[in-house]
Length: 65
Length: 289
Image 1 (cartoon, chains in turn green, blue):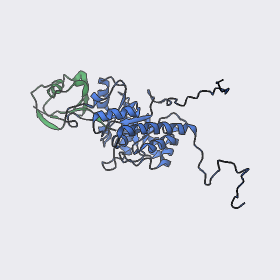
Image 2: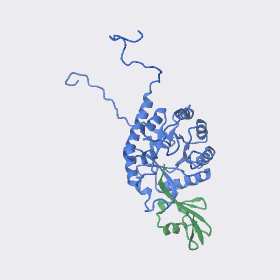
Image 3: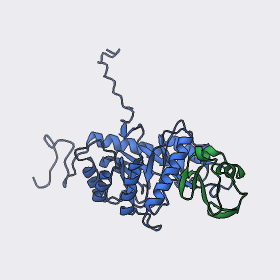
Image 4: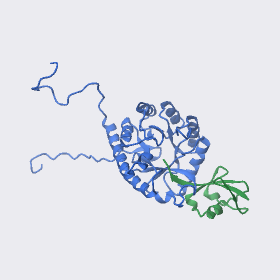
C-alpha cells in the first residue's frame, strides 16, 4: 500500500501500524507526535493499522521563537 | 554602632528577585521568554539560554528529520526539568493549521512530562513577507483553542482593539508585537503598546501582557518593560547577535532595569530645564536678571 509520510509517498507493507512506522524510521516515540489524516494520534492508538492512501505527519520540536 | 561611631545603616536588599506574575496556572519567575531558533549551534543556544536567566523557552513544531540532518533533536539539548517549554504555531496561516500544531505540541510535551503541556504561543500569520498576524484567523483559533482547554498566549499586532477582542475571546495573555518578527526594529509604536496595556489591564491590572517580537537590542527590552509590559519574548535579537551569550546577559539586565524603572515610577517629561542645584545663594551673573 502507499502511504504519504511527511508529504512523500512511501510503499509500506499492508497492515503496517503507526508504531511500526515510527520504528522503521528509527525514531523514539516520546520525541515525536503523529497525525493521521490531519488528526492527532495519541500514543494509546499507535497500534492502529494504516490504510492505503493514508497521510501521516511525524513531527518533533525544532528551534523557534 | 560601628567603630567610627556611626549608626549602622539599615541593609537594603538591592538584589531583590524579580516579582512573580501569573498566566493562568503558570507562575512566571523570570519575565524574559527566549526563543530557541536560529542559533549557530545547539551548544551556543544552551549557553545563551543560561545567560539570559529565562525560565520559559519557545519552540516550533516541524516535520521530523527535515531540519537537523545530523539527526540530533532539540529535545536532547533542553533541560526539561529546568525550562517550561512554550510551543508556538509559527508558520501557520490558517486557524485550522494552528489548532493542529497546538495539539501536536501539547502531545509532545505531555509525553515528556514538561510543565508546558497545555499552553501555546498562538501565531496565525497573514503573509510570509511581513509575518504580521491575520486578526480574523487569530481570533478564530483563540476561541477554538480555549474550548480545547489550552492556555492561549496570543501573538498579535499592536492594535489595542484587536488586543481587546483576543482577551474577550479567552486569551490568557495577549502579546502585541513591538515591530515585525525578526526585524530588530524595537518598539516602533510605544503609544500603541501603552494603549494595549491600558485596554487590557483596565479593571484587571494583573492581566498579563507580553511584548513579543521585534526586539533588536537590550534597550528595546527596557522600553517595553518601562511601558508596563509584564514580560518580553524575543529570539533573533539574541540568536543573531555577534555574541549571543553576551547579548543574552544584556537582555537579562535590561529586563530587570526596565521592570524596576516601571515600578519606581519615572519623572514626567518637561519642556524646559529644572536645575538640580539651587539658584539661591549663587555668586554668579545670571543672564536676564
